[in-house]
Image (tube, rainbow, N blue to C red; front, side, top):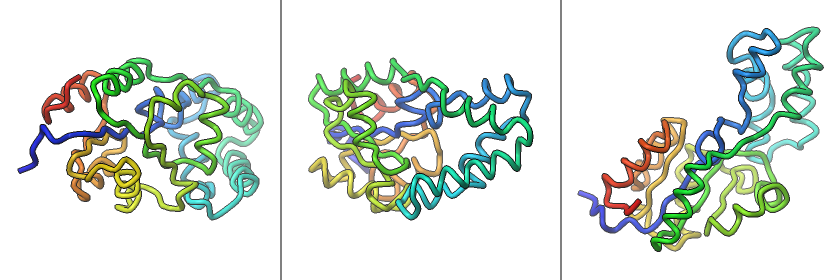
Amino acid sequence: MRRASWIQAVFFDFGGVLQQHMDGIDHKAIESRLGLEERTLMRALYRDSRYLDFQVGKCTYDEWLASVQEAVQQHCGDKAQAVMRAWQEAERPLNEDMISLVKHLRAGGYRTGIISNTIPGMEERLRAELPHLVPLFDVRVGSGDLGIAKPDPEIYLHAARLAGIAPQRCAFTDDVHKYALAARDVGMHGFHFTGYEQFAQDLRSVGVRC
């Protein structure tokens, strides 16, 4: 049995956990405003584009964007231009409750980190767009820069090594259930994220002071 008192580090997914929405964007609001079927954006941006290649650095931004434009045109027809504009101009709000939790954990002596499936250049984007977040995380791991994406075990192990903490002493949360389960497979306490209150309760269940 894992010893809960040994938890020394807490890792977070970014989109859908530290940000309010999966990729920071409210897909449902855009789809509703433009009269699109639910999950149209998900299919065009991620399923039918080259996103799986891009998130591990196997294609360029321009190649991914071209594939997105093609997929959006296929799914949205004469609304494609409006969809692209709405996607690119959308606000990407943070989950302020979770940011407050990170600050509380750091004040309590825990190490903190980000493990995110994202396009290359995560560190540069954070420093340019959200510089106040950078000091809140000891470790920042993006799949596009590492060349490995969740649920590959190595991305979790890499983050734990960077933190200098054994996986068994780490907790992790992700809004994608299989990614939380994959963290458990390497020894972490993996939790499926459904909201701040639930995750705070999850952390308390393994002895984390929050």
